[in-house]
Amino acid sequence: MHICIPVTEELQDTLGCRFVLYSVYLEGFLLCKVRYKDLHLWNEQIYRVFGNRLPKFPPKYYLAMTKAMTNERRLQLEQYLQQIVSDPVVTSSEIFMEYFKKLQMDTFNMPTVQLILRIYMPDGAAVELDVQTSDSAERVLEAALFKLGVSRELGEYFSLFITHKEAKGPFTVVKRIAGFELPFLTIWNLEDDQFQIEVRKWYMNPSNDAMLMGSTEAIDLLYLQAVQEFQMEWTRPTKDQQQKLQHCLKQQNKLKFLELMKTVEYYGYLHITSCTSDYPECDSEVTIWVGNNEMSCHFYSPGGHAENLRLSIKDLICWNVTLLQPKKQEVMSPNHQHLELKFDYQQGSSLKCITIHTEQAFLLSSCLKKMLSERPVHRCKEELEIQVDKATCKSNIRPEQNGVHAKKQALLKDKREYCVVDNISDLDL
Image (tube, rainbow, N blue to C red; front, top):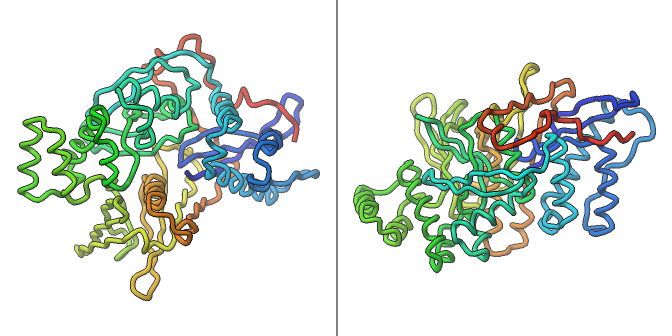
């Protein structure tokens, strides 16, 4: 998970005192807006639970802050939150879950009400869940798997994702929803109705399919996703494999289809398109497959040169994601992100670097990190440097304009006016 604070706002409280409101983004999506004072009070509370396990909290300033000091605090808070969300022990705790639930609900001025939330499957079918606006992704995933008949013990192999499907365009996996995020708010805050919440498997090693073969319901989910990958041409079967797979589809032989898919190139990989790269030359197009402990890149240069590069995860030295600064008149929005992923890799005795521009940079980074976590524990690989750099965004960038879609309005009754800062408490710095 990648935290950044690219936007700050200078506001006044009811007494006329000025304060800074920090916009916290999780993997390119607005998570919450918060004041330093509120985070400081929460840090004191959570410190009583976790003590020195927590990173150092940015110090107070007792004099008026200059622009340089404000920016320094922004970077310090960013680093603090990044370390917090990277600790699974902390993020799974009640004190963390409840506080970040409150931050998200207050930021979007959202009341806690019952609603019907649709969770989609890879074939486009959906299950309808009776949930609350304040339910976390962890809770929603449990409810979805329960309704699908998948046992709770297998929940670790699945996750919720934001996906996007145009009427006559490509299907895209946009991001994985973190366990402490509120899925309804995540989807509510998107401008395009073609975004949806989908349950998908969450592991990068296809051999983990074997762990799910004892559950008919889990096999059904695997089958639906495998069929989607096959029909979307994310995999690269031979002509013979394609004929056999088509036959299995007609016969609806799920186990045989999955068995054959295991032999198909790029089965179980995340497929990323619409990317550009500086390799082998600027503005080269690149298609990426990531999975099974490798990243495969197919480059096509403007001059017509094609080159394939397959890198084992152990060949990657480090990578970083950069959220580029929007133009002055642009609004920070998940719909129009400017992201790049740079990675260094070892080729023989030389070190090389490649930059890839893609709106799925955060998801690609998460998949690389997931592959590391699935490998046997090696101390040196656990210490692989994963950096997230953010270009500085000035505080005069206007806040997001959060639209409300008609179909979403029907989900809520007696909804309050949609405002991004009303419920932030007015505490002085």
